[in-house]
Length: 309
Image (cartoon, rainbow, N blue to C red; front, side):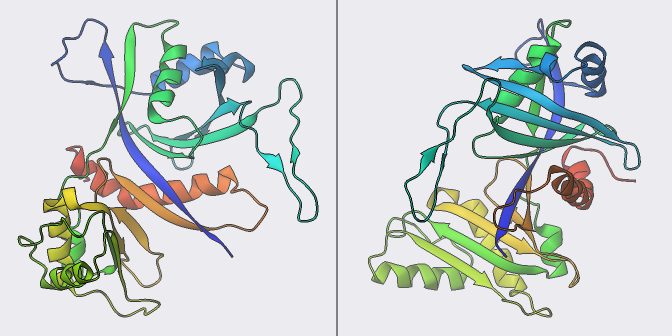
C-alpha cells in the first residue's frame, strides 16, 4: 500500500493593532474571539466565501471537539482553472467539465489548542498558503475590528535534538548536499561524513544524497556519537546542505517520526497508508494530527516559553 508523508506545521496566533509601532512586540491573541465572531456573523458556508486572487476561499468546517478540547478548521481554495483531465489506459484523456457553482477544492486542515493558542496546520501543494490563510482570517475579522491577526511560525532552534540524542533513538538520518565539489568540510566534526564527501568528490559528483538507516531492525539505533556530530555539522554548515532529515523512535511499538533539521518552523511528519483511488478522510487525518500534536506539545511549550507542569 502506498505511503504518504504528511507534514504538520505549528504556529502561534498573535495580533497587532493598527497603531502599533513596527518594533513593538506581538500581542497574544485568543483565537476563540475570532471563532465566536464567525459563529455569530457567518452562520452558513456560503456566507464565508471570500475572494482570493481571482479565485475564492471558504471555511468549510468549524467544529469543537469537546472531549479533547480543541477546534477543527477546514479551509478550501476553490479553484476553477488548470483543471486536471480524466484519463484511461485505452483512450485519450478528456476534460473534466465543471458545472456552475462547482470547483476543484484544495483543502487545508487545522486544529487549534485554545489553551496555549497554537494552530497546527496541514496543507497541500495547491491549497492556501500561510499568507492566504492569514488573509482569509483577516478578511472576515476586519468587518468588525481594527486588529490584524498573524500566524507566527514556531522556531525550533538548534537544540531540538539534544534530548533525542541522549536517549539514543535516532533510527534514520538523511543529508543532501547541493554542491559537493564546493563544500568545505574541513570544519565538520563527523569523520564519517568527511570520508563520504571526499569519496564523492573523487567521482566528480555535484550533488549527493546520503541516507543512513537501521532498516527494519527493532533493536538498533544509529551510532549516537556520530549522529550527534553530523546533526551539529548540519546546523553549522547549512550553506552546503539542501535537505536534512532525521527519523526518531522513542519506543519500538511507536511509528517513526521525522524532523526537518533545516526548517525555519517547527514541523512534524507523519506517515499514512493510502489506498489507491482514495483520498485521506479529513476526520482520520484530524485524529492523527491531534495525536502527533500531543506528542510534540511539551517541546512546543518549551520553545514558546511556557513550562509544561
